[in-house]
Length: 260
Image 1 (cartoon, rainbow, N blue to C red):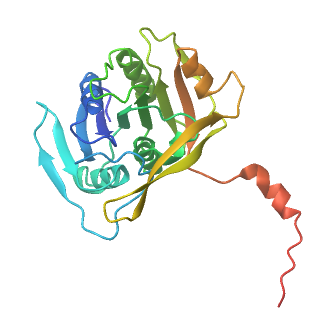
Image 2 (cartoon, one colour):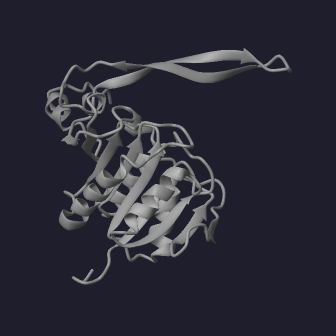
């Protein structure tokens, strides 16, 4: 990108190409560069880093918002990023990948399951500076206006500075009238205590709805959960290298008794 050239920004999500959150993200990114959208043709929440391998993928250009190049994809959020890089950009990568704005938080352990964050992770795998944005409101009528100044400020800083190799940003916003500021955080130690609500269909076959309770096992004041509870935007740098480096010395002291 030359000094006077506008950056190219790939916009993706997991709520679908017609979700209100992606429109807010598109409008915000249009102030920063040339926007190209590749998003699922329907909701893909909770798909994590799934890819489509057992059926063909469709990629169709659509015209939903003026002056924005847009494509809907029949696959997952990760499929969207892969197709964007390989087919839409034809190997010439965008300067920034932003995902969201998700309807609902992706803090703590939720980052593992999130299609929003997995799209951003795939961007980072492709060496594209990437950010996932999420807001604490599941409503289709959610008012994202409180997020917009922070979305723009964070995206501008990433465009200006880039990100450390192999990392990306997980950004979550609380549902408040006024956000107090930005906190750089670590991911909270938390999990879902899951249960399955068992029911019976008219054919007398059992089926299940996933339910559960969020369990926070972390009292730290440097976590994303703490920041959100205290009305801050939580910014967590995450990485796709899942190696537990601290465990390598422990395992190196093991004695593996391998029988011939």
